[in-house]
Each structure stands twice: as structure tokens, then as C-alpha cells.
Image (cartoon, rainbow, N blue to C red; front, side, top):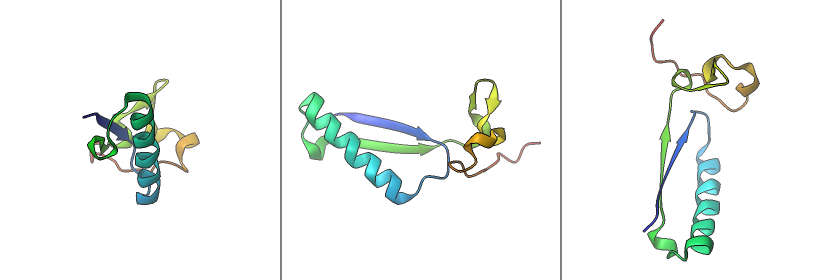
Length: 76
């Protein structure tokens, strides 16, 4: 049984997660020969200030503003 863990920044809709889950399930069935009902996908949202790309926190990266909901950890 494939267990697939996906870490995402907050801001993706249920429809986006659903579409992603369907596409990844299709890929697992095709590539691994897994039974569709055995493919498990777990989504975990990671706060944008706990992720950095290129040395810039995702919460401070203006180029991600359309995709990321800015949820802070409460720290200053």
C-alpha cells in the first residue's frame, strides 16, 4: 500500500487538494501497479514561516502571495 505524504503551505483549497489526490493516485496506480483503494495520501499544512526557499521565508516571499495564506506561528 503506497503511503504518500504531501507537505503544503496553507492556502490550497479542498478542490485543489482533491484534484492533486486524484492525479497522484492515478500515477501510483499506473507506475506502481497499486490498487486505487490502497493509495493513501496525507496532506500536512506547514506554516509559511517554517519554510524557506533560497534563504527567504515563504511568509515573506511576495512572489508566493497568490498561493500562500500567511499564517504565522505567533512568534515575533
